[in-house]
Length: 361
Image (cartoon, rainbow, N blue to C red; front, top):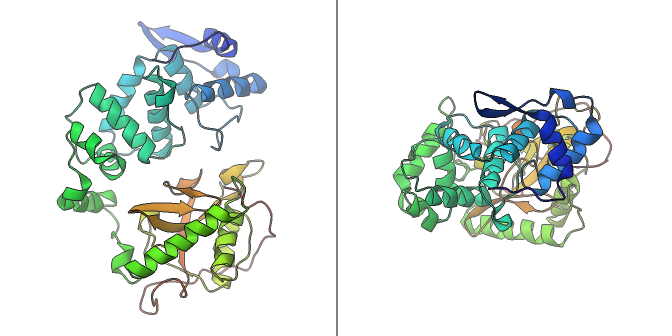
């Protein structure tokens, strides 16, 4: 379990104020912190250092708001034994949101004393979180996992095969039936599309070559961390395609003006073909916000060694930057993808455009 050191005086002070007990069970009441923004920010930074709050590139980081995520981190610090209870509930949850994944990541960090075992708290269920969860379940001897639960599907998709075997989940390479079941149940109210089977994507050789170019350009460009628009602009320029750099959300207007078409039949970023661009909007109440919440996000899809990557200022295994819930759509260019003349695509139109500015995630 997480242990507090002598340097955590801010956390000790805050815990004395917010920790309550009811019937022997600990809970957190942060109502007294609503007018103590600076102290709350310092406390959030201290929680992040222990893996009990969102990582530094997340939109919640250092926001000074003592909300649900902050309260959960404080609870895990005050009573780390509750981490086990939350993870058990998460395994049974049929509708996990990014905020629920954040809590899962915090709970996993609270369940260990090993700093090297702590994972990034970003709200994405990628390889790092899946493998850490698999290790936790192995340590706790948990094997009775609902194979159709969201977490089981995520484990099946991202965790290492050896770790899957240890917790009784079939190796994804050997379980086509399981994969088909997961795909069908993932979006029960929508038609599920595999981009490779519907003419949206290049063939395998073209896809591999295009993915290598995308990744190579990204690794050698000058886009700084957080500047997704600049990263994608550099990639497109390197591929010989005209583009207009700008904030992430503005790409939904600028892409169609440069020959990109929106694939309205793709509702899930995981089905976007290699070479496509995915756009995410900024928050509705974006005024004064930084990062993806204030500027939106844009990224390109690539594949490497069988793993899907989402590339902007750098390649990531998770899609959406810090705003995956703000998905706008998938866009393809005829010079990068197969013939789209018979596909159900629409050209998004807009009479507005915004100047090149931050292009932040």
